[in-house]
Amino acid sequence: MKIGVIAIQGNVEEHVIALEQTLAERGEEGEVLKIKHRGIIESCDAIVIPGGESTTIGRLMEREGIFLEIKEAARARKPILGTCAGMVLLAKEGDAEVAKTGQPLLGLMDVKVKRNAFGRQRESFEVPLQMSFLNEPFHAVFIRAPAIIHAADSVEVLATLKGHIVAAKQENIMGLSFHPELTEDRRIHHYFLDTAL
Image 1 (spheres, helix red, strand yellow):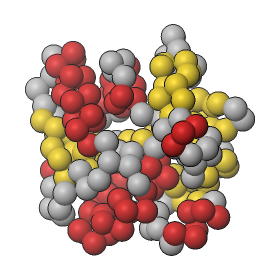
Image 2 (cartoon, rainbow, N blue to C red; image 1 turned 90 degrees about the vertical axis):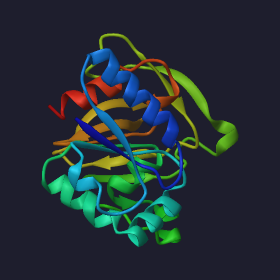
Image 3 (cartoon, rainbow, N blue to C red; image 1 turned 135 degrees about the vertical axis):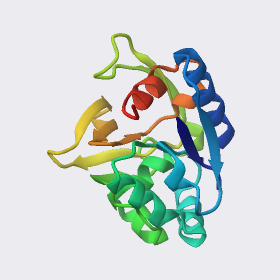
């Protein structure tokens, strides 16, 4: 299995380590690739878009030709996970703050997102989060986190917090407001890789 992590900006190394650990826990052969340029995504079985600064990541993905390749991967039904800024990029629509930056959106999930839904950097927090597919709560790390403020009926809600959707899935695409790679708990990465089989 080949898993690609978009490595233009943001929490790249943490995702690479988390995915390598997840593959090891599963006893599966696999490779985690850092994607900085076009031409690699087609060879990947699953894609991760990490957190960071969504405007910067989106514009650099467009410039490098990665943007269209991710859309093609989605059409090919490859699993795609977006965390924090990555979730913003997966959305079809953003709030006024997203619109103001003019950032590109992949439009792969029928959702509207709000940037910094829980406040700025100093309002970052950690919380035990109940998720629909886990028996025990997940220790979720929220850093300048976005949230889904509207979702179509075709979107499966996986978790909510303070009246906002913070984890959702639509077919092969999953978006999270928080950073699962910043904990030692690999259950979400296992769930994601289960969809890549």
